[in-house]
Amino acid sequence: MSEPDRTVDPDPAIEPDPRVDPSPATRKTWSTHEVDERALSRLVDDFRRGRATKTLFEAIQDGYVVVLAVLVLGGMLVALVMRVQTTSAACAAASCQSARTLLPFAVLAAVLALALATARLFGPVLASAAEGFWIFDAPINRSRLLRGRFVKALGIALLVGLAAGALIAALTGSTPVLIGAWAIATGLAAAAMVAFAAAEQGLERGWITRTATVLLTLVAVGALIMVVGIAAGWFALTITNDRELLVTAVVAAAGVAVLLLAGALALTRLNRIRRARLVSGGSLVSGMAGAMYALDLGLARDIVVERRAMERGHVRSRKGSGLGLGALVRRDLLRLLRTPSAFGPVLASIVVPYACVALGFGSFTPMVSALALFGALIPLMGTLRVLTRTLGLARAFPFTEQELRRASLMIPAVAGLIWSVVTLPALAGVGSPQITDALPTALVTAVAGVLGAARWTAAKPIDFGKPMLATQAGAMPTGMFANLVRGFEVVLLITAPLAFGGHWLISTVIAAIAYWFVMGNFDMDKLQEQREEQQKELEKARAQRARAKGR
Image 1: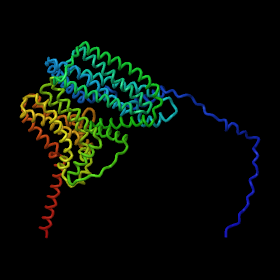
Image 2 (image 1 turned 135 degrees about the horizontal axis):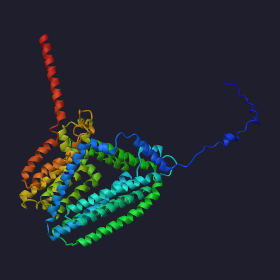
Image 3 (image 1 turned 90 degrees about the vertical axis):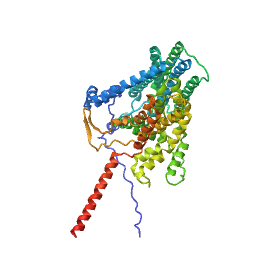
């Protein structure tokens, strides 16, 4: 039985106490003042500088080995540029001069496309996670805090454009006046593209930037094809130094106009950029900085690939087929069909040997072409990257490491073979025009690119648990500095005999030795593990014999 319902009388009205005045509690306010963003920015800078343990000059003093290495490598690069410039300027034919004139235009379009793509990937305006949490989540004017970062992004683009324009103009044998003109034009145009990307970032709009990047890439490839056509005699085009100087002036003026207009729009839209967009660019930069601290360029590329995959979202899964190693090859083929843009760099690198011949690079054509193919084949080696960095997944396959690497290199090797066949007419002009020498030269060049890309992709991560080297800059893991030249050394070693007039058989022998190393047949860590296992088996056998004698 439930208890009967009880009626509850309502509470009597509570009369307010006339002696207590509630108005002060309801009218209580806090004294606030408007935030000064500049003072806040200076406070953050002081906070960071106050926790710095060394100045920039002290860090450079401690890292004198790195500075010395940069100076030595820079001197070698300058010597190589001067030698190539002398060789290129020696070609006085009209086709060579016209081709050299058009090459800076191709590089200009390529630099603009790279500036747009990089700016869209990182922001270009960004902020760290701590700043996004503590500062940009508050009701402040973000434009005052982001203005300096926008100017820094423009400065970086300007410096990179200056260096790229000056380098390519020097390689083509241009006069000092034209070298300076191309450097200024390329730098201003690159800064203008970054300003345009920042203006689009304020509107949270990316399709215009992506479309412009594709168009500029097509213009760069078209300019390279024109270089090849002029050298082959398909058509003629004459551009004098005065006209070329006028074109650079027009490009620089257009760059200044776009820079001012897009920069003004970007400054007015800085306050519209969402905090999540700012922080995402900052997190990407933090990850890239960590990868560059370890001098691991492969890890930096992995971070970029992950970012692009997150932007894409998802893809439609496809069922695999085949048995054994053929199944891995088919998965690579399906991945290539899903993202055919990965084969685009290989198609673009086909123009490089023809452009080198047109510019009169001579015996350096195989080396430059192999380096171009080396960079173009890296997007095709996703399977090799996963299997070499995920050892647990590799152990799950009933195959040896060498078999897995050979299967992973099947699609890149086929791409390299196609590349060598298509570029055979260009490489036939290097050394001997006979097909018996031209075909091996083309194949060796392609093999150098494939092995260099495989060496770069299959690089092991830095092991900070091993004994380190004591340097003035602190403890450095062994092999850290080798990451900077990993892959490049294979290409240079294989193509060096061809560049200095040697026979292609020498390069073939070097390529065979490099293939043996790249396939993982000589791995000190694995040899040490095998030695430890053999030592354990030997001790176990000795213990069994001792027990047998005791009985």
